[in-house]
Amino acid sequence: MSGETITRKKKKFTEEPNFTERKTYRPKDVKETGLAFIGHEISEDGKAMNQFLHYDQLYTIRHGQNSKFFIGLLDGKLWGTRCPKCGDTWVPVRTHCWNLDCNLEKTEWVEMPLTAKIHTWTIAGWSGRSSLKRLPIVLVYAVIGNSKVAIANELHGIDPWDVEFGMPLKIIFKPKEERHGIVTDFHFEPTDDWEPTPITEEKERIKQLVEPVYQWVKTLK
Ligand SMILES: [Zn+2]
Image (cartoon, rainbow, N blue to C red; front, side, top):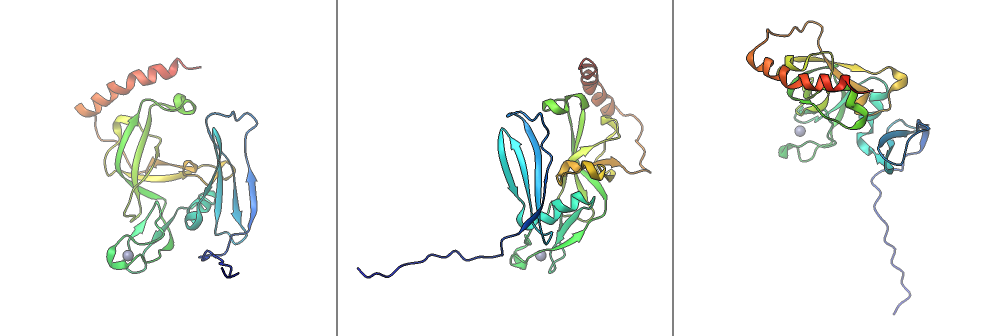
């Protein structure tokens, strides 16, 4: 046997980020059960973000090349990505184009408008413990700007029976100090000029379905 040594060096695709901005917002009373976002770190160049999620144990979510989307939420901005070849745009973001003809073209960042349209929706009559008092909750998949995909979030400021497919929405961010760079930093609301259409048989049916939920929530302390 020769004394030759084999070195296996992994090919590096990118330099390791230097995380310099680290925040911890872990509340004092977080138990070892349940889900809580408890901190994040952002690299010196502002391009990479890791988040710390406590869900029975501590997780680190490495956002890698999608980081700009989550850092944007901290700033009250919605970033999407766009293929420079075919122009397709996405929120939630894609790092590479999905069209075969584009041969996995790397996407570029583009700031999205804070407006959307409902693609589909549902009414939640049950939830995790932390949201029970807010029931019933309207959950929508909405298309932001000219995105080719829809993003899920809550719709506030509307009676559940008045929600309609295709209705125009605006995006409302929490106050800056309450944002954590997570999708719940924002929610949807109907646009200011939107008005519900008159009550129909279907609306009446939904109204009757959610009524017991409202009554039950009133009994919660
Ligand atoms: Zn493309």
